[in-house]
Amino acid sequence: MQSVSFEIPPCHPEQLAAVRRELGVSAAMAQVLVRRGHGDPARARAFLDACEEHSPQLFAGISEAVATILGHVGTGARITVHGDYDVDGICSTAVLIRTLRELGADVDSWIPDRAAGYGLSAETVRQLAARGTRLLLTADCAVTAVEEVRLARELGIDVVISDHHAPRADGVLPPAPIVHPALCGYPCAELCATAVAYKLAQALLEAAGRDTARLARDLDLVALATVADVVPLVGENRTLVRRGLRALASSAKPGLRALMSVAGVDPARTGERAIGFTLAPRLNAAGRLYRADAGLELLLTEDAARALQIARELDAANAERRQIERRIRFEAEAQMAELGERHAYVLAGESWHPGVIGIVASRLVEQSGRPVVMVALDGAHGRGSGRSIEGFDLLAGLERCGEHLTRLGGHRAAAGVELERGRLEDFAAALAAHAEGAIGAAHPRAVERVDAVVECGELGLGLAEELQSLAPFGRENPPVCLMIEDARFLDARAMGEGKHVRFSVESGGARARGVRFGEGAKLPVGEGEPARATFALELNEWQGVVEPRLRLRHVLGAAGTAPQAASSGPAEGRRPAPATGALHDGAQAGEQLALL
Image (cartoon, rainbow, N blue to C red; front, top):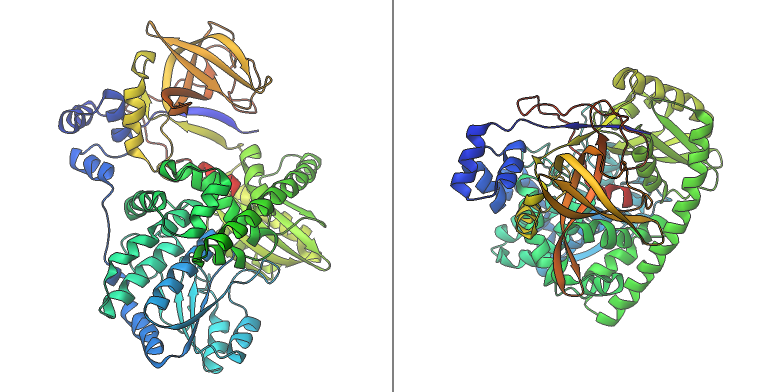
């Protein structure tokens, strides 16, 4: 299990005073802003306003992509949008199809299933050529499909690529117009694929002389995908999600309305957690277990009855996914125990579903603090999905082990592989050896980054509401972590048949009420003993009443005592770094990754 330590980034008094004076915020809120790099009042105000937005013309070469697409629209040629089977893939496909339909295009879609593997394949290209496709427009894929794009062109198909994944290690790009935030010099290099599609759609409508205001109706899809794909929620991504959440609350799309109804989500209160933990897993479920076509149909249908039918199917598929996930996780945990301590784990099983192993890998990374690759074996072959830890580039590690793999792709934090069964042990050994060199001998320690040091008297409804202006939360903008240095826990009461505990926490002569979920009915330290503790301050609504609620994150015993963790596993404690200490670079990723 990972050990835990606290780290307090710098908070210079001059910046703290300036932010409080210019923005009129509380001392705790000012600490959060300064410690998150917004010590300049103008920069802090801009972050809170979430208004960063850029023109699609800042994608180098987008004009060629637009001209190619509009040329095929004008001739009435068949256009196929080729997406991917996850939330980002189907949302980006939906955005492009909706825009092309508005422009009068002859457009259809192609979403591969997981059995066929990720991305554009040569077989797909041949099938599309045979059925009359003349322009292949990709969404969330194909930046590495060099040979496949060449084949398409040989068969008389033009190609335009919209993607956000890493290109091939050798730097070779497909011979086609490419719209890609990192490759095209766009100011926000970490857009998800749906945001890229949204920008391409904007450029298409502008070039065609159409009103781009209607695109705001598709910001609900952009918000869904941006949160689900766990891209950094800063800069333009933050703007798109905030605007998209408002669009989602009033969405007229029958499919999204039905999905929220089936999932029990109140549209007026839909936030990033509802997307990450409730809506996105259901949209992903069909693609994980069967085919993603159902998810795409849900997003495109105008038939409310059909939308409700599909939403119920996705809900059932998600329930099935969770059962499969539990079984695979138990088997994988047994393998990890048998393997013992390793710098990276490669686990494999005969009956593992390839659409679920990525979720299990995420959970095992949280549990072990090590990179994990899960491989679903099928005959002589295997398909794997991996997740990583902060500071370890999983994609780079897989590329170093490329001689043992037949295919790989993904990101620093998440990636996929294909390999022959006979190379499995060699791959596992090679990845563990590379991880040992990259991570070092010490077991990685989870760092709890503290945003503000507070007393109980500050933890009221006003601060809870004030902190909500920092939302949406996610990668590079995690939920706020508040620290009480001299916390004493009192009045513990069991909740939920002993699964949870509620308590009072005292400091500075004041008390606040708190809860700890999923760790049993006992307090993490003895009643009344001094400890350092971190909390999330949330707005909790129950029976129409909104109250502040402290949710315990971690506890470290006072100096000289054996520390304990509020989360599973032991924790190593030390005095927090002083306010002038170095800023730790290990920001936590969005919690929703484990469920997607």
